[in-house]
Amino acid sequence: MLKGKKAIVTGSTSGIGLAIARELARAGADIVLNGFGQADEIERTRSGIETEFGVKAVYVGADLSRGDATRQFIEDGVKALGGVDILVNNAGIQHTALIEDFPVDRWDAIIALNLSAVFHGTAAALPHMKKQGWGRIVNIASVHGQVASVQKSAYVAAKHGVMGLTKVTALETAGQGITCNAICPGWVRTALVERQIEALAEKNGLDIEAAARELLTEKQPTLDFVTPQQLGQAAVFLCSDAAAQMTGAHLTLDGGWTAR
Image 1: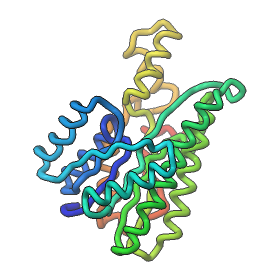
Image 2 (image 1 turned 90 degrees about the horizontal axis):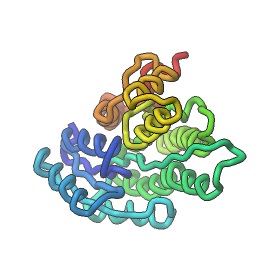
Image 3 (image 1 turned 90 degrees about the vertical axis):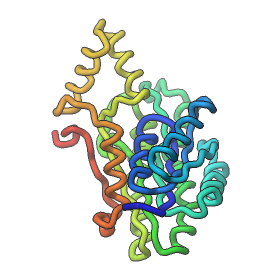
Image 4 (image 1 turned 135 degrees about the horizontal axis):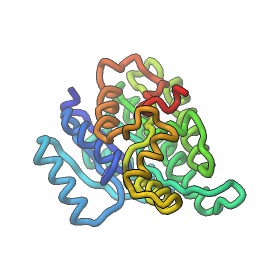
């Protein structure tokens, strides 16, 4: 479906981003990986994608908390693959605290990576997409781009911002062969969520699986975690011809969270 397309996926050395990169590669796209990790593990991931899917995969490191570095990262990715057709803005971090206790440095870091990096990456990729008359931008927002939770002021603010930026991008590129949409996951059992499960287990004196179920019970009616692979398949759909007239929208995969 995506054979010959060139995709840049931020935060893709593990978790949701890696699953998205793998599903895009499965559909035939060449991939730029980005993120943190041990160099040997990143190389195994990169070479494994090439071997398994028969595509080109490269790793480009960057500090996406800096605007200039994010824009340069896109240019480096374009150089590595020979262009960019698909940009998936996925990289993100989390911190929880009451608003009055929220560390200023953590607020700044979350806004920089979860929101500003989406802006800078998009701004750098759009000229390439406009020149070729085709592009797909997929922003990984969150159910927290639609509703709020306590002690997540920075994350919720950033993800709401991503939803707004998605709509503006869609309007500014309408009719130019470019779409911009967001994916809004509920609970996905990534390392980020695993830490929240562990904290809940410690707080309530539960084992890990009981704490995981309690986390789901509070928000997610299906009582099942969304899988990274499901999010990857959603991203492939948004890049397909079937979604060519879908722009400025969001796909919500939240097990019924926002249906309440």
